[in-house]
Amino acid sequence: MIGIIVLVVLPVFLVIAAGYAATRSGFFSSAAVDGLMVFTQSFAIPCLLFRALVDLNLGEVFNPRLLTSFYVGAVTCFALGILGARVLFRRRPGEAVAVGFSALFSNSVLLGLPIMQHAYGPDSLSPSFAIISIHAPFCYFVGITVMEFARADGRGFASTLHAVLRAMFRSGLMIGLALGFAVNLSGLGLPTPLRAALDMMADAALPAALFGLGGVMTRYAIHANLGESVMIAVLSLGLHPAIAYTLSHLVFDLPPEFVRAAVMTAAMAPGVNTYVFASLYNRAQAQAASSIVLCTGLLVLTAAFWLTVLGGAG
Image (tube, rainbow, N blue to C red):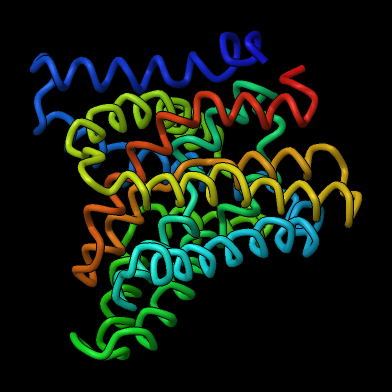
């Protein structure tokens, strides 16, 4: 396990740490972090997702058992997060849903893809892209629906759903996915110059995003929400991948590359979208931010553990 931490997980977190240190020390400004994140989230990562979807064998990787293995665990952790926030921490219904959303939404792109690629190589990512392609729409749909049933104040369901759908489908990530699906299904090929330019943008996406993520992490702190953050860590870093492993390997007996994708994507820390969701409803922002910090820090150990369970990085 020590070898996996050093050879596979640590390089990813050294890039994050470099971004954190550069921003914290003032060598990389907050405005530069924002600019880098705009580049990665709106341009480079959409190019990465577009390229992946264009090349994806949809019939091969869109396996219902793969998606079930991941999303059953996600929804289970969401429900338990809400229950824990209500029963253990006496949070109001809307706050409890925002806490549960932190256990639902994995950082599948900024953390999941680099760790998978570094562990198993770029050819291992196809099943991960199948999960990622419906991740944001699924999680937001579930989160919005439950939040609107749980709370009794604020804007109505229709206006909230319209605002979120508008924001999602103006997102570069969603545009990249949609265009990738369209080109894949059309059967059209990409001209060589366009493909070469696309490769340059896509290859820059993950290291730049990791460095930017380190800068973003300087804005969050654990504060006084350690209990809820620990609960979210247990759910998102422990229970979710355990369910994914049980279903994908022990129940469905999926091929190893599918099991790896399901487990390692499930094993990721909460994404920044959990804070976006909490801010949208003005519920439990501090808890969402705290869980991002704690879970991302713990991921150095937990990712290595799950890689060991899966047979290491070889």
